Length: 112
Length: 117
Image (tube, rainbow over all chains, first blue to last red; front, side, top):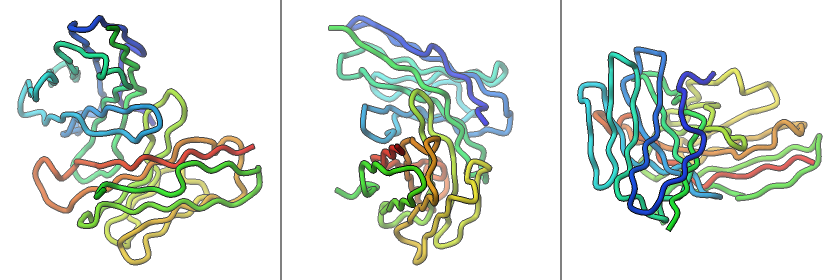
């Protein structure tokens, strides 16, 4: 069922560093690409999302870069903090289709 | 708290028993989704409701699973004759009806963790 491939599975970054998580998709009909953050025992929380008509979107320390021709998008977390330690999921969705496809997740650890 | 709520948060049951979970979406959201999440994986779509109508069901939703949203507000997910493979986190999400970027935005609840012994 998975149509979104996410890498790496786990990532360790020093405080203040940049965390980069990548995703690739197959279905060219996808038109909405969100990133979710999930802490242990909690549900996923929407972090930031992008549509394919723009190549980059920034919200605070979080930036999505989108490459439509390569069918790839990535999440950049600038000035990473220990509080950012969580599992991050990319996802993709097609308008009119309610089946949101998620990547397998990246466990981020930010060391103080 | 006006977010999506789920009850119970944890459920331990014996194989063969029936279980039922409840989801209360954000009050003005007419769209409701159920997902299943196993350890180390992303959520997998199970089913979708628009108001009280169940409009989509995944192949993952076997005959032992049934979901309802009788009045277009809260929803229940029932699993009959549970199996050990049903052990997972069951997540509920809701979305508003408006268009634009909000069209796809899904707000998740905290989930119900099911353990089948």
